[in-house]
Image (cartoon, rainbow, N blue to C red; front, side):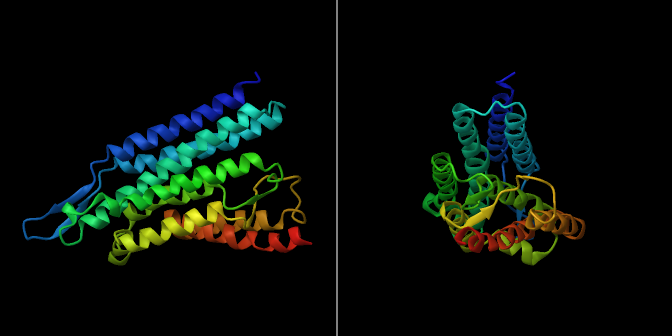
Length: 255
């Protein structure tokens, strides 16, 4: 019974590996129509990666929940959880960005002959995720707040990008998602947010009162409203709301 939380953690890793498989087998590329217009071909396999990363996040929540419920927390479980998170919320999202960068570079002049060096910045994301998780494992104080944005939040944000891109028919959105410079900024910002010491609220509840959990309840309410209004496009907005609602923590911790 004590190993049940660890089994959920391994399931997190399993889904992360599945996400990587479908990302690498997606076959995305650029095609030229009969009238010479370049269009993007992105088969649906890559969107399965978004599903697998979301499933990894669900079981990642339940392994911690079960560990506390069954009083089965252990040093091994903590290390195993971080190792799984590196794959599911670091490597897999990094490869999603890698594929978008590949398309972005291919659109340019002589893009198909461009150096792979243009794509390597995507790998900064899994490196930052590994750094953030190692720091988390060494810091016993990160229970009801985090130092830096947790990797699952970043992983879910990046997992939403293929879904937003797929469901959007707006040319401006396509241009944003196929602009390599925007991706470089995204990688740098997300990597910095993970390795920084910015206080970020944990979604663990000591109790369920609004008084002691106002920021968390506000985030939940805002998230529901945004999902109803914007569907998949709500995820980046929820991520921004999560950061903004965490900012008051800095003053609370300082006091």
